[in-house]
Length: 259
Image (cartoon, rainbow, N blue to C red; front, side, top):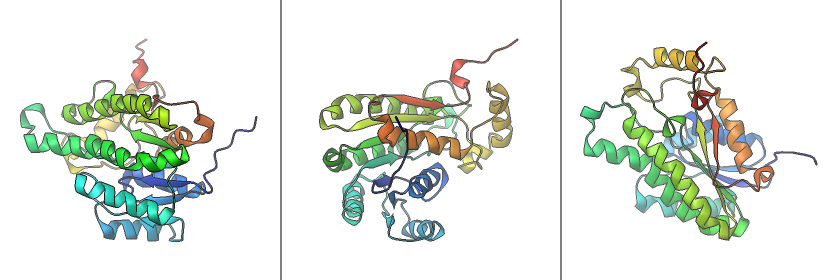
């Protein structure tokens, strides 16, 4: 058996893909031959990302704020019309400033859940009819702190990502009858700048060093390692994998060995 991951001829919609891990994932699919729809609330950021990725017919602009339910279906419909079909949806939003429990407001709670969970669910709902046609798949990017404890201030974000993991399992059960696979990916800490200023207040650099010291592999992940995991989950070589949670955390969830 020859194992190959090739996305030529495939159409992929990556949410929140003008920056961060979402952009890296979009670049990974594009470099593997896919046509990729780039999404962000800002049209200017979408167009700038497409330009920086080299323009061309395989890059589709799909601006839209997916935390707003009224924008989700029109955004998906425009993207699918431009791509002509949809094979893969990647919900890659990773948003949520760190906030201590006693500082959490109702607006903050709703904002984090909307960005990470509500947008993923309703985007999947909008994409499901197209994915049914291609027997496609969904990959939800969660987080390792949806499975275990995180740093101070991460209670709401970890709640959102833990919800996303179980949501993925339940969606996998229901959508299997339509031939749609649904999996979640849980990265650990990634070698990238602080994604939000709220993390700087907690000493993000020092926190990364601490996480690396606790990892059995002695380091944090690279973006490329995370992209490879997502490409695997969406590929035909993973055609019997659904309802699964793929963890790339250097062994953190296995515990910390103290000699």
